[in-house]
Image 1: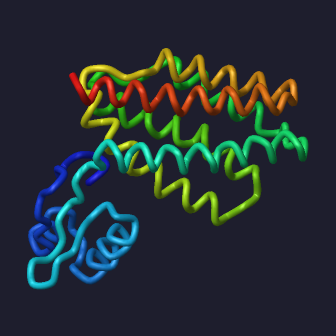
Image 2: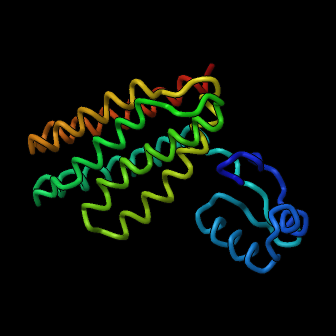
Length: 201
């Protein structure tokens, strides 16, 4: 519900009301909220309960994307060095789907876009074979996804993202480590710049 934006940033979470709304007993709901708390998607205060975390500020988002860049650079180097080119077909299919939206309502279109974009990057990181980096990336992407939605309402950077993904795919195909690192760096910096520009508008 947080990533579907039924619960807004900063909103207090009433466990009993939410339990009835989604037809889930309070115990597993509390367990789920505890997990979200560990991922910093919800905050918790004694005697006050849970609330949806605020969107990351510009400094925190910049730090998050810097960490994400380090993970993705490691992953793409590993994929190329160990010749894990079997991921190319999946990357092409995901990027093709990204270029052709099926939904017309913005919220649904954005959810579809974010799901495919996440799958694209996770395919590369998963192929690197380090489960700890994979877990760290998944937690990061959730926060980027949340900020992206609230700051780019009315438009998705689909064209830019698809083009940057294509450059990453071609770099992997040619096994050009330098080109791949440059493509990943430009992609993440481009996403950051587009996010910050939208935020300032």
